Length: 289
Picture 1: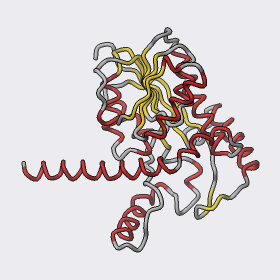
Picture 2 (picture 1 turned 60 degrees about the horizontal axis):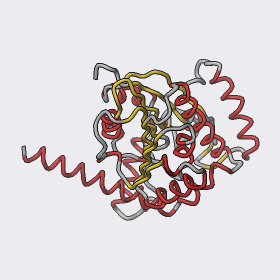
Picture 3 (picture 1 turned 60 degrees about the vertical axis):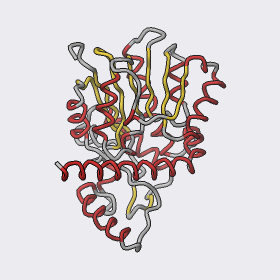
């Protein structure tokens, strides 16, 4: 029993430490997340495609106006504003005050501030009632969590029976990671163990929090464990391609390569359709829950 308690406390301490690193990273990079969607880079294009895919899935549900929607990790508030613009009542949460400020400013500028409640809040400790929201959206959140399972469980708790969740994950087996020996997914556990040793010896200092990637199968399994049924999923975004973490192509050429590969993925081309950078998936909470 004592060992179990010690293990639980250690896990909570690790989660808390990692979250503090993530929060510090976003506090110093909020301008990037405010501006990146307007840039002409390949990364910016992929972020816009991801947002469009999430909103298209939400539109497909045909939710009535005044439906309750939760956006987890609202960032600069672009998706929050888009959801509120569809007539929904949106609760937007983030763990960084600067992001909440940006969301409030964006909602005010778009004339939807009366439909948006933005607050500093953690997805791991939500105080919302169970079975409260018609839709939960978490875009770009799971890669920054120590344990995606706990977050998905909490999201599943606050969804109404018959309600939906739309989440995105960084695809572990994306094509752009497979040809770089410093990024190849199969070697990631070994690389992380080496990095941990170097950091403990103060030989190396991490420049940013570690990004957690998941395979499509892992995310689908976590959704199932949270009591959610997958409705549809897709991958999108190809690139930037790197070698030893150095970009191989300028943005214009990278965008053209992405567009060609994305067209193949959209046509469900084998070997390409599941290797996009981003996995976007919608799941439903059964009415019997």
